[in-house]
Structures are given as C-alpha cells and as structure tokens.
Image (cartoon, rainbow, N blue to C red; front, side, top):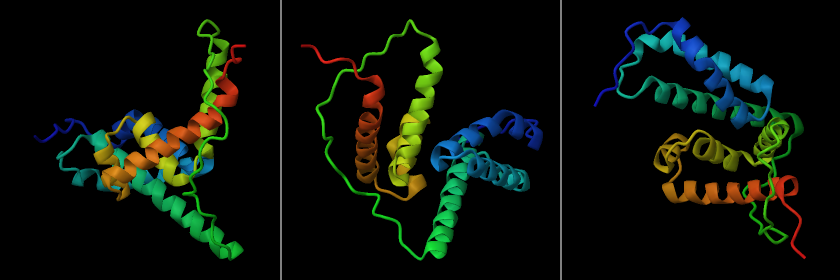
Length: 188
C-alpha cells in the first residue's frame, strides 16, 4: 500500500513539522549539538532538493528518518576519517564486551519529585552519548525511536541477530552507566 502524500507538501511544511525530530535523531546519534545542527541542515537541504522525487512508497517520516540516519552515519565517518588523518592512529576497538562488574541493584526513583525529571533526562542523554557508536546507533533507533529490528538492520546494513546483539549490549552498558544515578540502597 502506498502512503498518501500530503497535498501541500512544501519545504516549509517539512521544516516546521520534521526539523526538530531530524535534529533529535542526529543529536542522539552524533553526541553533540554542533554535528547535529550540521546534519540537520544537510538533511533539510537534501530533502528540499529531492522533495519532488518522493514517490510516497513509504511514509514521509520514514523517508526522512532514513535520510537522517544515513547523513548522521556519513558525518560520523567523515569525522572519524579526519581524526585518523590528523592523529595517524586508529580508534580503539569499540566492540569490546565485558560483563558488569557489580551485582544488579534496584533503582529507586521517586515519581513525586518533578524537579528530577529534567535531571534524569540529562543523565540519560549523557549515558546515551557515552555508548560506543555502533551500540548507540542501534539503541537510539530501537529504544528511543521505536523502530523494529528488521528496519534497523536494513538501515545500518546489519543482520537482525547482529541488531539484537548490539541492542542487548547497549542496554547492558546503559544499565551500568545509569545504575549509579538510580540505584537504591541495598536492603540490610
């Protein structure tokens, strides 16, 4: 089934409706505002240039999502190549897996304290930014954006088992990164 194309699909509509989401995806994947702004600008320019080629075979949001992910991955690759060229060193192996060093502890979050919401969001965003890029990509697309594993695999050129493995590892790292902020006192 072909998704309906909005009647008045204009660059202004795309910018107004989708720019914040494009920025948020890029921000989470790249880990900083400046790169996210660059990617958002690139995506919006690319979309404006190619808006007339959108055939409506998928939803507009899906198309924009794919363009954003591809642009973020390309931006990251350029940045990595530039850093390798400048330093002459290869990046450390980010795919290292280790078991958590401590026992899993219960989190103790008081929902009655609304002031914590902003701090919690900041802690979570910082934890996401600390994930190694291969894990961060899968985590953002699965747990933040809610995409199915098959679609994530297609976007990133991974098999579904590889997506599941990276997602599991990302969740374990997120647990370890967030535990110091959310764990409650152990019962005596």
